[in-house]
Every structure is written in structure tokens, then in C-alpha cells.
Length: 297
Image (cartoon, rainbow, N blue to C red):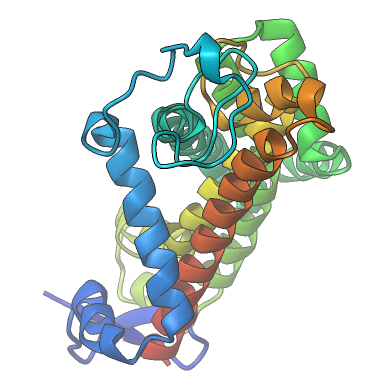
């Protein structure tokens, strides 16, 4: 069976054997910068908190302590408490699940919508390439958050609806990426060689064009998860996302607005968590993308 290699245009072709990309990346991981390792630790902690939050805290996120409202950092309450005495650390840990799952689901929805749109936009005439191109351009002219605001207003406020709204808002950007990569792959030498050898259109499409056109989405998907968490938190902060008493990070930001002057930590801590996780995804997957492109050259 043919093995992928680069044809000189940074596009995988078929010929000389190489080790699978994940194994090459793992082999080179020891040379990764410290910032990349710290980003990986933050992401692993977020995933751990999403899967088993009870192992990281012994408190319920809804447990109140009316004698310790707006308490400062202490051995009992590591990150203090909110206006009704709920432990902020516990709420932050349990909120990671909703925030992370919204980010993952939003990216899945965005990719599911973007891939067919991108392929349709790259089809040669007489297909509806021009119409799909114009549709993508129109959708790209609206900010992602504005599109998400519109759809969450229509669909209603729930974690699933927030994920759907963010996914729809992010889809046009990924569709443009798929379109550009598909056009690049279609004009590559190995696709022309496959056609010259008499391979069927279906074989060329499914064996050469589709796998190589969606390859750049793999690292980009990781970048998009961090962005989706930021957008979903922004919706909640504006009062159009997940509603209290949820401990989703955007809902924590929204709830902390009322105590901004008295207890700024109620805004600063969940805001820092959102930014830290988003930056960690961006840093780690930017490194993976750079290394994967370097190993194909």
C-alpha cells in the first residue's frame, strides 16, 4: 500500500515511507519548549476536572456556607466563596465539564457543517461553486459572536444550544480553510498522476483529495476548542448563555458582576481560567501544527 510523503508543495503525496505522524510527534516531544509542556498540563487538568471533578474537590458546587459569604482565600476555601458562601474552587472545577464539553461539541458541529460546505465551494463548474462561495463570504462578514448571539436567541439558553450557536458561528471560517485546501490538493501532481493512470473519480476523491483536504483541520480543531470556550463564556457573561446556578465558567463571570467592587476575585478567577485554557489550547496545538508541517517537508 502507498505511504504518504511530501510532493514539494507541503501536500502529502504517496511514495517513500515515513513513521506515522503521531509517533514522530511523540518522539520529538522531549524537545518541546517549557510553555508547551505547561499548556499540556493545563489541558490535562481541565480534562481531568471534566471527567472526574469529585477527585479534585470534596465539596459540592451548590453547597452553601452562609457564615462565610464572600470569604477570602483560606485553607478551608482555597479560592474564597461567592455571595452565598459557595466554594469558588469547587464551582470552578465542576464548571470545567460544561465549559469543556461546550467547546468540544461546538467544534464538532462547526467541522460537520464546514467540511461539506468547503467541498461544495471547491467543486468545478457547472456545480454550485459560485453560490456556495458567496454564501461563505456572506457568513464570514458577520463576527462569530454576533452569529452565535442570533442563534442562541432563537434556540434558547442551554448548554447544548450554546454549543450549536457557537458551532454555526465558527463554521464559515473552517469551510474557507477546507475550500482552499481542496483546491490546492486538486491541482497537485499526485492527483493529476492518479487521473492519468486511469483511477476512477471516486477513488481519486476518497483516496487522495478528501484525506489530504481535511488534514489541516486536525490541529486547527484543537485551536478552535479554546476559541469556542471563550465565545460560549462570552455568551453566558452577556446573559444569553448557560443560566445560574450552573457553575459553567461564563455563568460564574456573569454571577460575579454584581460583586465586582466588593469581591473582584469572583470575576478575575473564572476569567483567568477561561483565558488560561484558551491560551493553552492555542499554544499546544499551534506547536503540533508547526511540527506536523515541518515533518512533512
